Amino acid sequence: MHRAAQASLGPLESWFVLERASGFDRARLVPRLDDPVPARTVAFVEAMVARRAAGEPLQYVLGVWGFRRLELVVDRRALIPRPETEVVVEVALGELDRLGLVAPVAVDLGTGSGAIALSLALEAPRARVWGTDRSAEALAVARANLAGMGSRVATRVRLAEGDWFAALPDELRGRVDLVVANPPYVAAGEALPEEVAGWEPAGALVAGPTGLEDVARIVAEAPAWLARPGVVVVEIAPHQAGEAEALARQAGFDPVTVKPDLAGRLRALVGRVGR
Ligand SMILES: C[S@@+](CC[C@H](N)C(=O)[O-])C[C@H]1O[C@@H](n2cnc3c(N)ncnc32)[C@H](O)[C@@H]1O
Image (cartoon, rainbow, N blue to C red; front, side):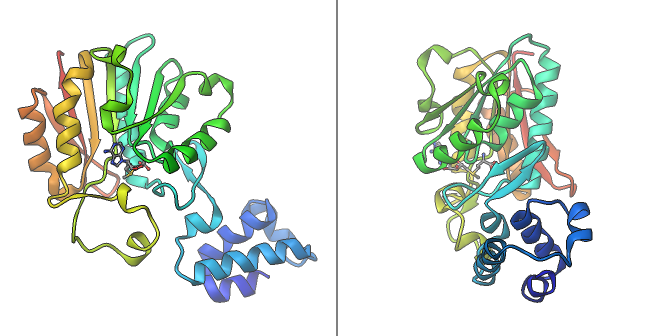
């Protein structure tokens, strides 16, 4: 079974598939590799290998993927959470710490699978967190992930559907301590790998002709929703750093910085108001 999977997928991906099918991690799987395998496990592995061979991203094939401390349900209704977004969460948590509030209010705009919102709720144990999305399908994935969180986290998270800030109740105006977003930031017509363009939701990736349309809207509208002091943290593409920084300054944020991801590429726009 291991050799058959490896012949089609290569060593790393075949381990992921076998771990998923067996329910064992690699350390527990290795001593069992010569054990007989139930027919349903064989069928599950074969189905995953066929999907992967057809070009479907490994994360969708597995149906679950790790993000910081979470194991999230992922499927084609929502973007696959990326490692660079884990760094955006780290930056957002640092900003929450700096604010030093007892029960901060954080909003994750465009929550997709819920990766950012649920990580904030888990790792900032007193934060009250809103996750919003325009896509009802993505929110269904976030809801499935929220359901797996346990009540200590789940009772502090609300999910809402709508266009950026319009998803939020009006009472939150001026009361949000942290706005964080990983919005679409690809320009229309920009080349994307087939594995991304062919499988992930276009509405999660492409912003418009320049790629900065959604970043610009979020940064412009955030001051009206933020408390003072307040912070906005937005994931961007590295080449957008200069323009994104200028947009944040125009909106009244000061100071504005852009923090790098683990590959050293400028990734997280941070704007503060009312220091
Ligand atoms: C790049 S994905 C990020 C998903 C998730 N936050 C993550 O980091 O994995 C962008 C998300 O923004 C949502 N989105 C796009 N346009 C939106 C809009 N106008 N209002 C609200 N959400 C929007 C998409 O549906 C998608 O879930």
